Structures are given as C-alpha cells and as structure tokens.
Image 1: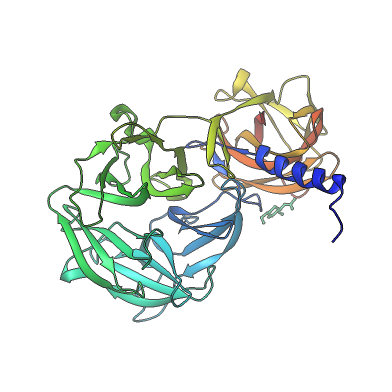
Image 2: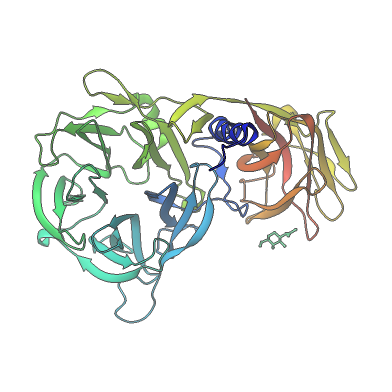
Length: 462
Ligand SMILES: *[C@@H]1O[C@H](CO)[C@@H](O)[C@H](O)[C@H]1NC(C)=O
C-alpha cells in the first residue's frame, strides 16, 4: 500500500478541523427557526431520535393554529441547527371509527427504535377535542420517517392518561423502554416499563400520587436517571422541575427547579432532553402561544450539571452548539439595519415608519421590482452562518421573500408568518452560506408579490 501523501493527510486534518470549528448559532425562544425550505419548523411537543449521526425531530404540526390533529412532522439534522423537513410521519385518518381524525388531539409524539425487530414505535397522548378521552396512542413503522401505521389506543390500568413520554435506556443490554405519564387528571404521575416489543405496558413501577405534574422528559447521566417535568398550568409556562434516581423504580429524589422561578423556565415547558456527545445534554422546551399554537416557538438551552446531582439551565439569547463535542458557548451577531449605509433600496422599496423597529423604521414594498440589498456583510469563514431577520408582516397570513446571496450563489424562498401588525416585529433564523470577510451581498426580493417589511439582519460572528 502506498503511503498517504502529506497533502492527503493535510486535507483530512483540515476537514476534521472545519467540521469541528463550524458550529452554528441557536436562538432560543423568540425567533422562528426556518427549515431548509425556508419554512418555520412545526414540531411542537416534540421528541428526538438519533440514528448514526442523524438526529430526527418528531413533533406536532400546528400550522393550522388550533389544537386539533393534522400531522406529526419529521425533520432531520446532523448538527441540531440545520433542519430538513422529511415527512408527515403520522397524519389524520378521516372516517367513521377513526381515532386519529382531524377532530382528535395528538400531542407529545415520541418515537423509539426497537433494535430487536427493527421497528420504529411512536407513542403519543391521544385525546378528543375537549380532552375528555385521555388515552395513549401507538403507531409503528419500519422506516424512521414513516408513514406510521396507527395500532390503537390504551387506557393504562383503566385510568385516564394525558402528557407522556417514552424513553429507551441505551445503557441497558435489554434496551428497556419506559413510559412516564400523567393520570387522575394530572394529579398522579406513573412510571411504567414497556414490553420488549415496546407496544404495550409490561409493568407499573411506581405511582407518584398528588404531585400534579405533566410534560415529562427522561435522560440518564453517569448511571443516574433524571425526569424533568412541568407543573400543570395548561399552555401557560411555569417552573419546571426535575428529580433523579439510581433506578426508574425509585426511590426518586425530591423535586428541584431547573431554572429560577421568576423566569417560568424561560417561558417554556419541557418536551425532551436531547443527549449530546461527551455526556452533555440539551433541554428542549416549547414556548406555547395558546391563542395561535402555530406561533409557538422552541426554547433549547444547554443543561449544566452542578454538585450533588443538581442540574440547571440558564438563559442565553444566542449560543453555538458544537455537535462533535456537545459543547456550547455564547455567541453574538453583527446587526445590519435596513436603514444603514450598507443597505441599498432598489426600485419601489420604501422606508416605512415602524414603532417596533430599531430606529423607528423599516423598509417595505420589497417585491415587484422593489429590493433591499445589504452589501459588505461579514462572514467569519467560508461557511454557513445563522442569519436572523427581524421583520414586520401586518397581513393576517404569511408573506414570502427570496433571500439571494452573492448574486444567486445561493437563494431561498423564506416564509414570514404574520407579526401582528406593521409596527410589530418578529424574527426568523435562516442558515446562509457566506464568504469570509466583509464581502457578501444579501438581496431580499419577491418576484410574485410583496415580502415583509425588513427591520434588521443579524449575522452571527465567531
Ligand atoms: C415562495 O413560496 C410560496 C409558497 O410556496 C409561493 O407562493 C411563492 O410564489 C414563492 N415565491 C417565490 C419567489 O418563489
């Protein structure tokens, strides 16, 4: 065999270096997160499954705004920031006798993989429109993306069941799976073990009576099981808590807060704890908007481990996640105001008063020849960057705009949900390839109609 050339070794080292150094920003809480089609991710109450190096995110598609069932969406990512839409993993089945029609409620879908029979198993909270049914639903698929086939529903131990999660103990040679759910109208929490095919409940391990909790997320670190959960306050956020134990059967510790009480868990409700490399974990929560569930957003924050098994999360408005090591660090952005000298208004693009915007105005009439072009936008490397766009869309529905980088080297049609008025801003984060240095041009336009009014572009820097 020939010796690998020095150039070849250098290329490998460079590739590894670039992969490690190329970490993208996450903006928890406020901004919409666009998928690779430029559409805000709809995967609420979600769960995650990692297969090889790919993370799959399953969650409720609330595009229609209400609480009734339409789809469980599946997205995939290798960095937990860039998400590609994969499928409607489970969709409403209409017709007499269907338990999962568009008059049903399907919440907190969680998918686990059964290695024994290579089957993907989805469990969810199944309910009727007024939450009177209170059961658990099960669906299966031979592929991760589905479509999952509905198997039926259960009332565990003949009791009601609402928020739930399922979780596999990957350290266990048996790959035991567990179900945690709320019963007796959320007063009690049950921890149960699933059968080896993950399709039924094998044994109730424990019932925690009168704790009045919901929204469970399980993880395990260094042999210690943790369950994060919320209080039961409907769509409103509250102080989420955790408890820990050496065994899923208990005894469990007292419950402790994961975040300062005044923050209401940074205005979120836990839905999952995502395992990262090197024993690190990320809290994933939903920031629900009860008036329009499609407007609900995601609060992801790294979990910090303290002494005596304590965990906590603290606020970061923007942090980068290194998927190779699971490390996170605070990161900042350079802001480009639409009224700054770097921004050129072309055609009919017009300055608009906007009380909710930086400096009191935005640029509107972008479209039908009107364009806004940011010049000299700085890239930190020749690499993808998370770019946040603050905008106003006073319509009652979406607006669209085309984001074009460096004369069409890359372009994407971005969906901008309504912002609640022309004076009110919202934000959306998009992953955009840029060249290194203050050399990039980002053009916002729309050939078929008008885009949103643009306030500010924020480009991450490192
Ligand atoms: C962007 O996508 C929307 C929704 O699919 C579509 O209506 C619109 O025509 C697209 N705009 C452009 C410029 O491609």
